[in-house]
Image (cartoon, rainbow, N blue to C red; front, top):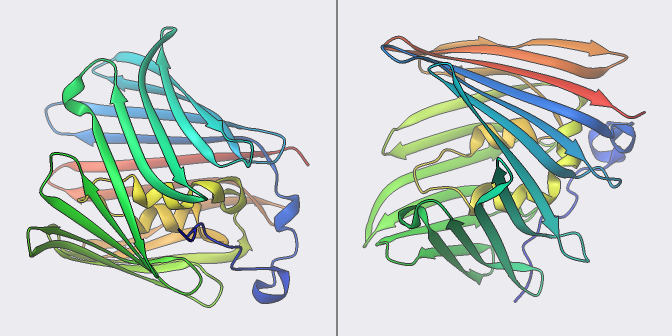
Length: 284
């Protein structure tokens, strides 16, 4: 089976970014606060650490609901070729869930999620490759999801079927630098999203590039992936969003052309809002 792991699609000559290799992170914080009527604020604070090849090695996630907090630690375990073989979650020293990735050669053949606390949350995804198309089936589920990639091995379409009926489609477009510039969703939760970028290097691009395939292969059929691509898998920094509900401009701080913080607030209507806050720390 031929691997569909993404190649490096942008180099210095193509995108005019000159210091991509020097943007090695020592730490990255990604905090989300969701305000929900009658419930209040739900806060998830994630702090990532990185290994000596500038790939995410662990994350500490603190979730607070109704002033009650739980702490979870994620460990990214890798094979000898640095592909991720498992993500292990622990809380209070006990394993709570494990995601295992099985490869056929260098292609993801199976993803197995095992919840220690609730077997009803368990799932197994199986993948079949045909040219630039990956078809995913799930044991015990009637839903099939088809992922279509372009020549640069970027996802351009995610479509899910129940039987022969298409129930949700996301079509993704990119600019000449490889930035995810739009996501059009039809079927369930139909919407359109346009992403805007600066001209500076995105430090998350190289730090999370080994998780690119997993970022869409391991999503629920209903999940939208465009925002993840804009944030983590675009060579420039995401700074704005245009949606049917309106436009969001991020507050971004730089130091010597490096992004050091990014903040945004989304008003989803019906009293629901999301605050996003990120900080970036570098080793060089």
